[in-house]
Image (cartoon, rainbow, N blue to C red; front, side, top):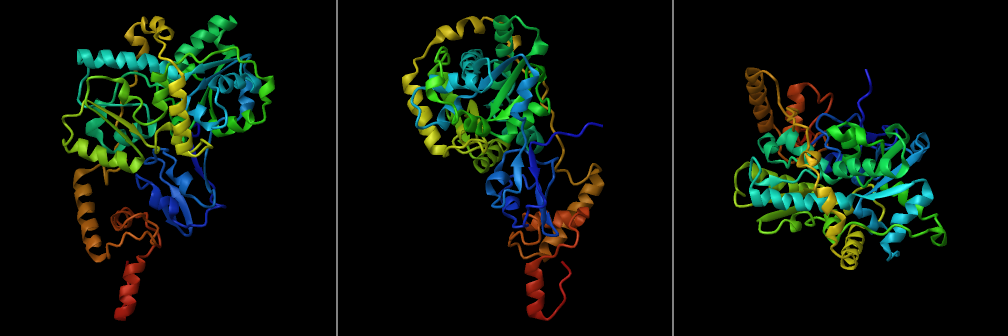
Amino acid sequence: MAETFRAVTLDADKCKGCINCMRKCPVQAIRVRNGKASIDYDKCISCGNCIRSCPNRAISARYDSYDILNGYRYRVALLPSCMYGQFPHIYDAKLILNSLKNIGFDHVFEVARASDILSLLKRELFIMKDYKEAPVISNVCPACVELICSRYHSLADNLLDFLPPLGVAAKLAREEAREKSGLPDGDIGVFYLSPCPAKVQQIKSGYYSNIKELSGVLSIGETCKKLNLVDVADVRTDDDIKASNMGIAWSTCGGEASNIPNTKQLAVDGIESVVGVLKELEDGKLKDIDFVEMRACQAGCVGGVLNITNTFVAKSKIHTLRKTVLLNKNNVTDKVDKPQEFYKNNWKWETKDVFKLDGNVLKAMEKMSKIETILKALPGLDCGVCGSPTCRTFAEDIVNGTAGDSKCVGRINESFRAGKNARL
C-alpha cells in the first residue's frame, strides 16, 4: 500500500518537546509524549502554524525538488501573484515573471488570470442566485476547506463549487502548453509554486479531479532563492503581465470578496479568526452575509509559511503592483466563453468524523460522561504541561487510552501541598 503523502513533517531528533507547536495548532492535532511531539494527521489541516512556531525547526513542509523538472521536455510554472510580493526591491513585475525562464521553465502562466475568470463567473453566480446555501464560502484556501470538512460539517454545502484559481490555472496552462509546444501531455510538466503546505497537501492528495493537469508542486521560498542568483541583465522581458489588478488582488485577504459587487461580504484571515467566524456561521449568527472569504494565513496567501518576505512588506508590494496594472478584460473574455462545466469542481465535499469520540453512540456517551468526571478533577489551567493542549483534550486522551504516562502537573502540585498522592 502506497504511503499517504504528508505535507507537514516532524523530525523527532530535532524536537525538544517545548509544546510551542501544540499550543499553536488550531485543531489540537499535536501531542507531546515522552518529550517528543507527534502529529495526528487525521486532524491536521496543513495550515503551517506549527512550522512557524517551532524554534528548533523540527517541523517542516514537504514539496517536490527542482530535479522533477528534468523529467519533462516542456515545463510550465503556475505563478501565484503572492510571489510578486517576495521581491520588494524589484518594481517591474515582468522581470519576476520572465526570470522563471532562466531557472528551467519554458512557459509561465499567472494564476491570477484564473482568478480574473472566476471573479466574473462569481458575479454571474450572485446575480442569478445560482447557489445551494447562503452564505457562500470561498474554497480557495485548502486549510479552511479541510477545517470545514473535518469540524464544521453543516457548512460543507456552503462551499463554492467552482474550482479554485489553482485548478482552473492548471487546466488552462496545460491547454496553452499543448498549443505552444505541439508536444503530447506526457512531455509537458505543469508545476505550481506554492506559498503554503496546505496547497502542497491539496495537490499531492489528489483532492480535486483536475490533479491530472498538475505534474508537481514546488516551494515559493526555494524558487525565490534560485531567482536571487539570476543576473537581471540576462532576463529577457518578452512576456507581459496578462492578469488584471482584479485577479492579482486575490493574493491578499479581501481581494477575492471585493470583486463581487452588490453583495454583503466578509473577509477573514488568520486561522484563529477563521475558527471564530465558522463558529458564528454554524450558530446561524451571520445570516445576512452573502459571501465569506477565508484565508488561514495572516493577510492571505502573502502570509504563507513557504514565502520568504515579511507578510506586510509583501502585502504592500502587491498593493503597489495593483496600481500599476490596468484592468484588462480582453485577457479573459475568450476563456470565459468556455462552458461553466469547465470551471466546476466535480469533487463532492466529503466530511470526516475525525473528532468523534466513538462510532457507537452509546459508547461515545459513556466516554463523554467519563471525560466530564475527569474534567472536574482537573484544575482547568490549560497549561499544556501534560502534553495535551487543554485540560479537556487531556481528559479525552485519558479516556481514549492515548495519554500514556502523562500526569497533570497542576494536580500533582495541589496534592503535594495537601500531602497526598496525585492520580492524574
